[in-house]
Image (tube, rainbow, N blue to C red; front, side, top):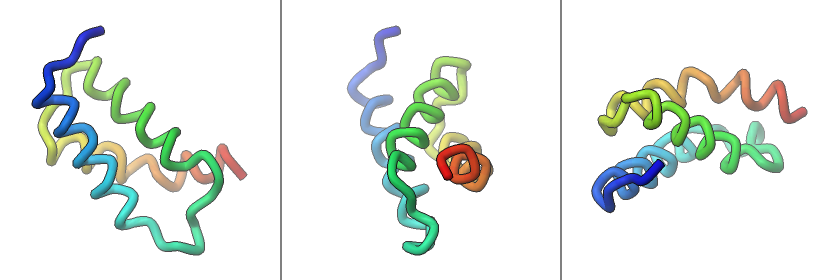
Length: 69
């Protein structure tokens, strides 16, 4: 799938916003990559707003951490 430069920047900004909310003691190896992948999949399914991407990914952070540990 091809994304516009604007959407790529929105996804990057959303990723950074989500990661900034994760407490340092919960950051595990691979977390940022897994959250980035989740954001890509979410965008591919039509959720392309910054707020929507941040909210959706934020809701999944604990699940992702559980899968990685």
